[in-house]
Length: 567
Image (cartoon, rainbow, N blue to C red; front, side):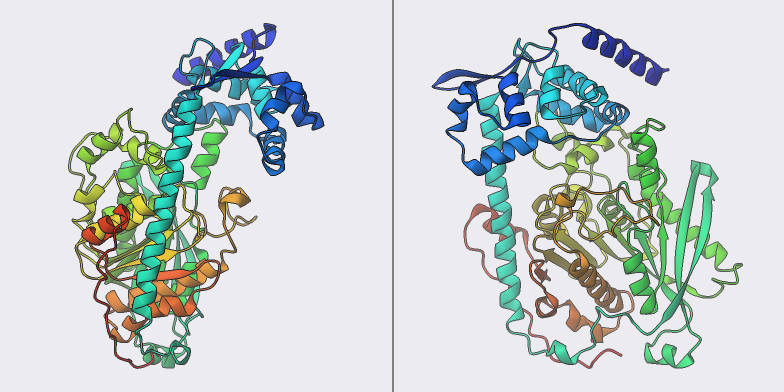
């Protein structure tokens, strides 16, 4: 009923605005102290966008811009965003969307200088409905106020704060890379003479798909299990692996599916690991597509609980099937279980490793006055809708975890992350704008208390560099090319190699693989422009010194001895 009334209201609003002449911004106004108020007509912008002409009014501003900046402005004004009105409505009426528009409304004000929240939402929907589609100019034309007032001072402050934050991020990344390079320089290992963990292992594998159904939570969980095959008995001897195989579970991120990490699942299976890749039905690509189409609501806050419970249920069902299904019978080792997750899946595996939801941190970070540039907070703060209590999400069967671009700074915080007592590897990309590396991976790395911890830093990698490309065979939502970053093949190879080294060392206790977990190995396989660095330690004090701009005391580098070549 609530959704029906929402769409009824939108219909009435649409009819009213499109039938009433004169509703739509005619001018953009901004106040720039101490020089006073300036304005520009929408007609002037529209002429520039469509014809490239700069009239007398626009020339005052154009003379202060470079040709490149003017070309970028025209390109932006001409850009048509092919988004349906249903999608715009779904997003802007969702809790996360409302927060984003509310924040934007602090910069784009109505003629009466009120927050432009409702005006922006209405104009977005109406522009998407219009034949011309959603463009900046059409957005202005649909703005239900004769003048759109720009909070210029506030905008400049945001730009300045963001610039400073990005500069700090770059400084932190550069400092940590320098530390990793210094540690790598003392290594005596010649990795050109060692086995190449980026290459597939010697096991063949087969894939079997299961459709699990957790009736108690009304959750259907599609699962692909990649199982090594051992027709050649010599292989099991060479790889020191026999039945049962160690088990790795992979958890995808928001709006992805179980095909996201096929490359990683196949690679691990080739090294003798059984790999189970599931889908989380409340936050997978199918659910998000239904949401965008108006057929489902946004992901619920209970996903923060259901996702770890999905993994628990999966392990329970695999233990049951392992006793009855001929394909799995006797082949899974539940004493050697690891978990890998990306983004929302990164949170999932951290929770399974023992990090409790930190409701006090959420209350502190999710107040309306928080002006953080951390986009992941829009998702993390949905957890404030949960009943504050101690949710039992830890699974003691999981002995190691690898979290790629995880979100965790507020949902778990230091109080949650510090509770993890098993080996952890965190992976961060320097150009990740959705789970910013400093707040979501680098600082949380300092909170980990177990000595077996690793921080992999990939320069120029984005939030999406680790995921498989959308194809006709999967349902992964397409990502704009600008957000993908450079060629992702290098990132795939890094994750393939580091995951094998990490799991062999800390899940299977094979010490000969430890040499691959040194900074020197990361340097050896690093490839421009996606340079890879690996750190084994970073204290809170060291991080604070880097952040404050002072020179941190270098951590004592390890001095590894050459070890036998892994076979």
